[in-house]
Image 1 (cartoon, rainbow, N blue to C red):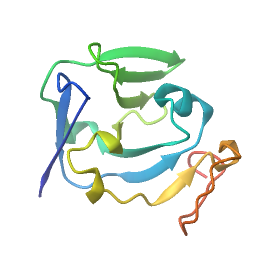
Image 2 (cartoon, rainbow, N blue to C red; image 1 turned 180 degrees about the horizontal axis):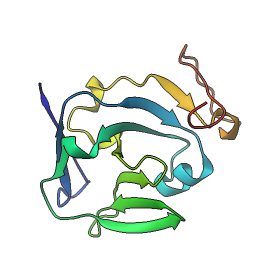
Image 3 (tube, one colour; image 1 turned 90 degrees about the vertical axis):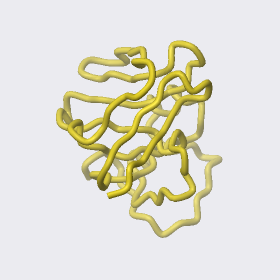
Image 4 (cartoon, one colour; image 1 turned 45 degrees about the vertical axis):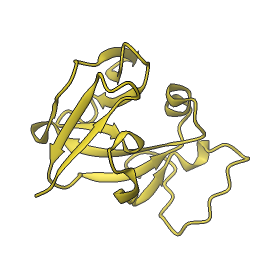
Length: 132
């Protein structure tokens, strides 16, 4: 299996994982949009047993009960998301990968929360909520 790596803008926080992602998708929820200052963000779920941080340990922000958002304390880049809802995996931002062009998402979640000025013309399934 190929090792996949990612990092923040300044390179202080980095990570690697091996094996397939549990899932790959775009999230349109307001919380993710605010966290990244982007119209939507793209994640992949990685088993906690499959990854490790290889640089500095990221800082953490508890954005809501049971939710942890990891970021670089130096440059502010969002790195990962964890939730008590999915205790065995960490969700990494696909754009932080060394080769994000190799990443292919499979679906959209929180489609009902998308911004009205975002027009996407793909054939991916569009779910109203996570897990729908």
